[in-house]
Length: 236
Image (cartoon, rainbow, N blue to C red; front, side):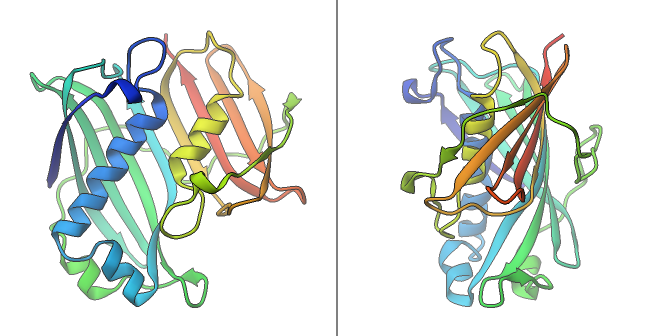
């Protein structure tokens, strides 16, 4: 298990004085990346071998958003490797140990030379110690198809959305999808499925289906292929 301790910065806060949703996912992304670096299978190792971990699905239950200046602890650990899939949990706690966020993620080990999933490298897998999965409700990796109620104007992917794999960072999909929601929609949970990696200059076409307790946003390409689908669950 790896733990990252930090303090919520003003630059991470929304107008509510709390860390934004995308920043919560950035905390988790930083924690698992730092763990990989500490174990010697981080960014340089993966780039040298032309491999990458690509996020396939992500779900999170958000009990409370961290506040400006608050000290928080982000913990992460893998609990299974199977074929080309890696399974990883996260939790974010406050200074007193209170649980703020719990999350599950599924990753695909990608061979960048061939542009396709590959069996997980033995050294990359053996570097980690597997731990027991979190006690939480686990959703399917796939989100069911739906007929949208509304179609929104397309958004062009800017250069600053790129990560070291030259793909749009997964937190940016959430940031764009969240912009499709009504301002009064208070997000208490999220389930995201990543289908196709967007690159700089791509056009993303958002469409949305809303109900009283859930909003589902799909980000499509111009030819109708899906980049990502994100379900947002409203606070009760």
